[in-house]
View (tube, rainbow, N blue to C red):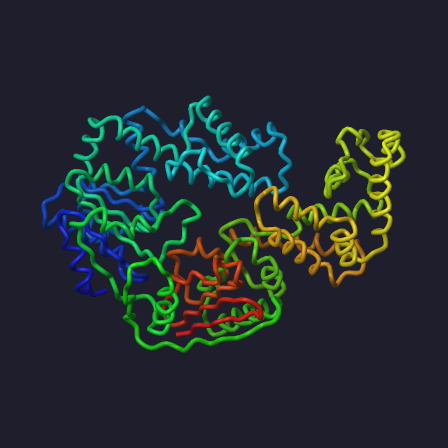
Length: 588
């Protein structure tokens, strides 16, 4: 790729701060590696005094490899790494930490499970709850926020405070730190020990940072200290590509960089070498609606491209059928499955689409675990009701649904391996209100006995009150009740075609067997369609891309993230907007 004037201006920057606004496909990696080479060869900078920071280990390794290929192996000694790797190195010298002091994921999960059990919390979606709580704790540490001023989005403030303090106590007792502690401890070290800070300032005299729009407050605070007194800070990023605010990223740091460093220079990499003119123009029209951004005029190096195609669908099934049909059509004209991707907002969305892909034997891969509707805790509850209606009397089944909805049945009343309603009534004796609840449960199970699965789910929802239970649980968890109701709707829809429980259960078993085969095939068949979240797709490239379910309320504010995912002639872009379902197709 020829180097354009904007790229040259960035590459030939020597001292002082510089902000490089790098639009998608504009060659930012080339600029970072070439500027590093320029500092060494033309400015006489010692490679060991250069620090190049990225946000992932893979990106750091790729940057390092690109640099060595560019220099033919020269320039040994340049420091490439992630924020965490760099800051942990500093802590190792200061506090003699080793890898054994970093908490493992399994240890962290065990800590949280113990805390949940100790607080006697009934959490249905325990795995998701732990992930979300971990993210909140990370946000607090990354913002160096006072816990007293934080309002949790996953539970009450009182409970969150107890969880946070219990987690911190367990870390300290075990002499462990998490990844966020690496940042906080490094910042505190630099603030308290000017002598140690001076050593690392002398070591890292030139600092280059990639994907700067994803930086958080504590990372930036450390970097500002580290860059003193010369402020040879070269930051590269695109405020329009900031999609990790939920992880603590603060794009406003980049937007305010000129205020923090008024003496700094700015350059815009405004040529997109990846996508065609039509895609770049459409992206520009969309993203200019962002109110807080650097104004920029990005233009494509590749001219032409097809106009946007718009199609409308009334039902999800129609959309999924079209996606699969198009995948097969592209495959027939010679595009490998591995050059195609389907993007979605969250990894629970594509369950119905996965059904359709399996129906047509389209191989696919997911970065995350393949979502199984029937493993969802809501599905487990509903299926348990059905099994009890069929005559199952296992204690574990009763414990599963006894208080979903709330009946105030004590675990101790289920003593025997098999539950007998007569003994259940004996346990509560003359407590008429409890006997009424037990009578109602027995009546409900008898009523469900001969229903079809679809009708049974409807009765469980309305007649038994399970939908009200989900609404109450959503309020407790501070999540949208609609998200849980959507799962219930999807489960009920999947049962529509089956007349008996046995028939539906056979289908579920066959589906799960097929899903296991897909998991095995993922390890063997590399020629597969990629299923990936929008956040997980950042930086990836495919020839054909589908973006589905970008409805208002699913994709944030109804505006899909559609940056940095196109390549070559067969680019394909799709998303959905509010009902009726609209799909936009971009084919250069």
